[in-house]
Every structure is written in structure tokens, then in C-alpha cells.
Amino acid sequence: MKALASSPSSRNLFLLSLVARMAPAMLGIGVLVHAKAITGSFASAGLVAGVLAVALGVGGPLLGRLTDRRGQTAVLIGSAVVAGAAVAGLAAVPHGAPVWLLALLAAVAGLADPPVGACFRALLPGVVGDAGDDAARAAYAADAAAVELTWISGPPVVLLLVGLLSTGAALGVVAVTTIVSTGAFALQPASREWRPGASSERPRGGSLRVPALRSLVVVLGAVGVVFGATEVAVTAAAADLGDTAAAGPLLGLWGAGSFIGGLVAARLGGGARSAAGLALVLGGLAAGHMLLAAAASSVVALAFVLVVAGAMIAPTFASVYPMVERAAPPGTVTEAFAWAATAAAIGSAAGSALGGAVIDASGATAAFVVAGAAGFAAVAVTVLRSHVLDGQPSAPAVEPVAA
Image (cartoon, rainbow, N blue to C red; front, side, top):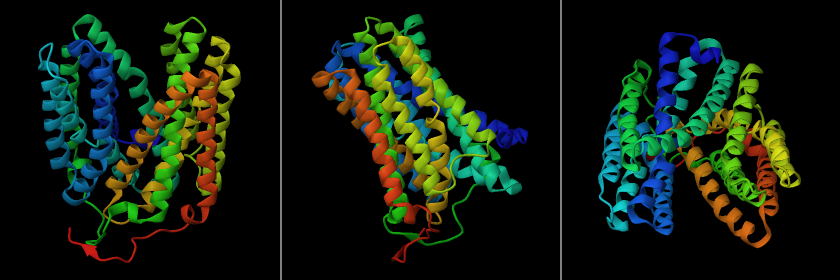
């Protein structure tokens, strides 16, 4: 964490980014429980939550590209106001409101969700300054670990607010958090002064024109499947063991394992530095989650193995983030990080759907096998594309687009 706390300004930037990233961690579950309360239907609530997830995936790269062209402050503040207003609108809809209205507001909220995570990672090389590549890698690892805290704490905070107040009030808190924290981050000197790469030429097709970026997106998509399948498998395993309430704490231990793994990676100077190293990290991720299949018959065994499996999550991202930053063509780094987040989110949604289908057919143990298999698929892609990932990518020679 030293690189992120080397000065008051960098420490403030880091903390504000975490608060701003808490809002998306709260939004998904908040929208789901609110839509259920408004419509009285889990099916309708699931539809609205699905629309939100798709919109988040679509909006991230679009706002990332806009940020790369126009700078961070205006895009972040503008998107925060729009997203916050849409979430506030969701909070204010009356009981019995039509599903299409909820879905529309969820779509706007997702499309406009501020890309704070991508923006912060685009700032990291400048934040560590002359401290060198090791410091940058350690900073990526520390960030990956700290983000786990937002996903561990976000859903419980929303559910606590729902219990104390109401589903609408909980979403109102999310709306205010989005606008205030994103605005505070965007007004920090590092964010206000950030400018895209010096090159005035950008490849048509953006960052995905680069083969290394496409490979990393596929890898992160497979990693997302690991996460999605594991989440539903843990929930199903807890229910099979007659302790449904254990699912929440078990998933919390999974996130805690990731946090610990990220701290260790940061202490050791960051994640893997090559495709071979990334393949080893992904192999640990895959093996740990495959081992969950053998632990599915005991809550205690699941708890232990989840911590072990989770310990490879943050190091995976700590390894991938520097590769994303290195592979992004000049002027597309924010978009590249947004694509990374989108790939993981889409993979997670696919993993949840696939895991649910497998659970219905064969049980929770089989879903853990799916999670492990997806991890090994990520290893295979990394090995097969190692020559691309270890290269020194540059913007392809294509017709430039004016900034």
C-alpha cells in the first residue's frame, strides 16, 4: 500500500476512488431488492437486474473511450449526475410501476455509471511517478486487494439500509454516493490534470484493435465465469447442507481470501510479469476453485478452501492490469481498462447462468467443476497467446481517427 499512500494527494485519490467504487457494488443488489418490492415478482426483478448488468457492460467502454478523448473530470461528473439521477428515479417509482419503466431507468443508470475504476488505474503510473515499474505493479496489486473490500461490504450495507429504512431509501443513498464521491474524485488534481497519451492518432476500433488486449479480454471473460459459477455454487451448496444463511459468510471469506492475496502480492512487488507467470497464477486460481468440488459436503471445508481459492483472485488482477496498461495503444488506456472490467462482468453473468443450469441438472459440486474448468481455459488461452502477451504491442497501422 506504500505506493498509494506516498503522499496526502495520492492517499486521498485512492480513498475517494474506493468510496466511488462502493456505489456499483451496492447498486446491483439494491436494484434487485427494490424491483422485487415494487413489482412483487422475482422474475421481473431479475429482468431489471439483468438490464442493469448489460448496460454496465456496454457503457463502461463507451465512457472509457470518451474519457480518453475528453479527459476525466467532465466525463466523470457528467456521467455521475446522469447515473445518480437515474438511480434516484428508481428509488422514487411508486409500487406497481410498470417493469418497462424500471428497466429503462436501470439501463440509463448502467450506461452512465462513472468509470472510476478505469480512470483510477489510468492514473496509477503517474501516481507512483519515478518510483519505477515495481512500485506501479505493487500499486495495481494493492488496488486489486482494496477493491475486494467494496464488494465484500457493499451488498451488506445495502441490505442493512433496506432493513433500517426501505429499498427506495437504500437506492437514494447509492444515488447520493455516486454523485458526491465521483465528483470529489474527479476534482482531485491528478484527475483534473490527466490527459490522454501524447499521440494524436488513435486506431479505428479503439484498444481492441491490439491482439494482446483482445487476448486479455478473453482471459478475463473466462476468469469472470469462475466468479459467477462459484457464487451460485456456494449458495446452492449451503442450501444443500441445510444452512442457507451460511452462503453470505462463505462468500465473505472468499473475498477476504482475495484481499489477503492482494496484500501479499503488493508486498512481493506486484503480480506476474510475463505470460508464463500469469499462466501460473491462473493455474492456482483454477486449481483452488476446482478443489471446492471436493469440499462441497462440509461448510467448514468450504470455508477453508474458499479462503485458499480466493487468495488467487486479487493476484490475478494485479498481474493482468499492468499488461492491459502496457498493451493499450496511446490514447486508449481508460477504454482498455473499461474493456477489462466489462469482460469480467460479462463472464461473471455467463458463469452465473451456466452454473445455475448445471446445478439444476447435476448439483452444486458440478458447478464448482465448471468454475475450475473455466479457470483452466484461461490458462490455455494465456499459454497459446503468450507470444502476443509478452510482446511490446503498439497501435496498429490503420487509418487514424481525429481526437
